[in-house]
Amino acid sequence: MTRKLIVHIGANKTGSSAIQRFLALNCGLLRASGIVVPDNEFSLSDRPQGFHVFGFEKLLRQADGRVQLEQAIDRVADAAADASTIILSAENLAANGNAPALFKGLAERFDLQVILYVRRQDEYLLSTWQQWYSKIGTDFWAWAISAIGGLGNWQRYLENWESVVPPDRICVRVFERQKLDGADVIRDFCNRCGISRPFEEFAYPDGTINPSFSEAVMDLVKGNKLIFKDVHDNDFYNLVLEATGHRYVKNGRQSAITFAQRQAILGKYASSNRWVREKYLPGLEGELFSAPEESDYDYLAPDALQAQKLEFLTTLLYRLHKKGNT
Image (cartoon, rainbow, N blue to C red):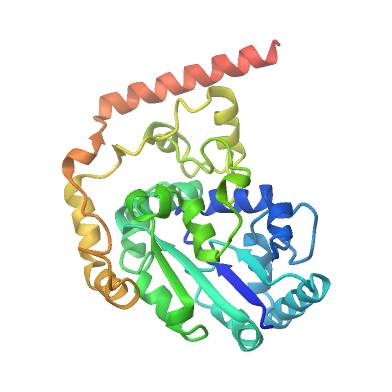
């Protein structure tokens, strides 16, 4: 029997954290169903984290990363001899040009399948800026000018992965609620993996996973080296959640850019998006992504943004004071 190796490559901000939390919560049930989720060091564990982002970051920095990954997956396969499927999940694999090479040897010995969730690029760029690059930079447009056209170019990402994995072993899903099975990314992912156990038997992650924050919060702290030590540092945002709950979590309507700017961004990806739809989703009606409408968004005036910043600061200070006195 050829083992199945499923690699969920992201992309970031397409429900990856929710999927990974689900994998971690349900590792026991999945194992009983013949599905193994290694830990972040690519070893068997009773409590895997459900993600492999940092494990792959380490491998991608090493000259023998491919060999190390092959040896680790072979050890997992040997230790879980009765399992039919191994699942890896790392949202940093989609955009990394060197990532597919790690899997060349594994593609020859396993039934290697790749799952990629794609998102409309205007939203993808804004979310990527907040999750990572706003922590080390202060000017969104200075960053965006260098990123637009390349970051989130799903055609380019897929062509890179096609150098190792045949297109018929790559599954592309559109990260829009109405295009997901059950309007749910976790259920959609389970179906792509061929998980046969009834979905209702699994534990479902609570709350919002990896939220984005309001423009007022972001604009106040972006690029602050006294707050963020690197792009992965989420300590401050965790503090905000702990102190203020979801009051300053960004809702889907709040927009930091104008509608004209949004349309200009999407124009840079029109051709590559058409390529993805025609090659990977030929049965999809219409365009790859649902077109945005100006009425979909709310725009915050400068004085309202300033007022929201002051409200956030005073609320945060008061909540921290109250917490310190309890």
